[in-house]
Amino acid sequence: MAKFPILKVPDVVFREITSTMTPIEIIKLSMSDFKMELLLQNQKYNVRAIHFELGNINPGIHINTTNECPSVSFEETENNNGIQLTKLVQLRNRYQKENEEELCLTHVSLEEMFRIYSNLTLLFSSPGINWILLFSELELDAFWEYTERILKTEFNGFTVCGEIALKFRSFEYKDARWLKIEDLFNIRNSYSVELGTTNFDCSDVNQFLHYWSDCDKDMMEQININLREGTQIDMQEILKNFITISDSYRCFIKARNMRHRKYIVGELEFIENEIRFSAWDPFKEDRLYQYLVLKLVYQKRDCEKKIRENEKKCRGLPSADKTKFQLELEELERKLTVLNRDFVV
Image (cartoon, rainbow, N blue to C red; front, side):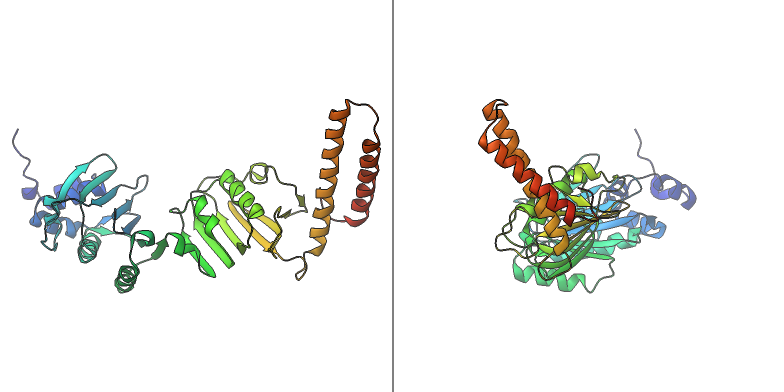
């Protein structure tokens, strides 16, 4: 079959043909011929966002279209040559493999990644250029070198991935989809955490809250989490296996592990698909009332559990322990009735 002479077709036809291509196909076409790359640069194809992921193991580029996010990854091989990259056609010799969502090329240097950035910004028009640094894959000197270079480019987002990304006193990540819920377990002694777009659902938040409740150190005073796009808030799933009290717009929980901690009262607010969680020191801040009500509710639940266990042990027969626990329960219910003026238990 004869090759299609795409370089010789009129501009209108060229535009029509290439407008149906995916970003990966556009990049591959640019890799085929330098003249082709220049023609494609004149077209300026629209994409939602381009994410440059930098690290020493598998750096990559992720390009958001309307429904897809195809990737270009760079893999270390034994045959990496020392020729510096200046145009995309040079990537042709670094081709490794591909599938529907990913194009794999051999590893590129820091300098080459920034040259690829320059070439892709000529190919694609995007309102979102985002840099993602994989701190766990970088030496400290390389991290600062990457950061310095990134700050000299035009970009919309700059994210540091890895444990260091969660060790600041306060931080905000507008795009936090790179985070796993287990990453949040590394937060310690932070003041404010803002997570914009995430991949978390209600069960993830429940897992995080249980970790916070059992943690032996204070994690943060406030964290706001936007759930995965399209996720509906399910309060029952979020608060599963928690003892709670609530008013018309907030829920409160108490940390199970209170040793060596100050911020032991948790407050939850739900706004659309955003969850706002605050931790309070009840003895220095205005949450002592909530703490005392929660403490009584915990004691009441514990007493009810003892009664059930005693009845099971005695097979429903009267016992001195049952009478003692019943009296204790009545006293706790009386105290709770007197103290609790505002909350649904």
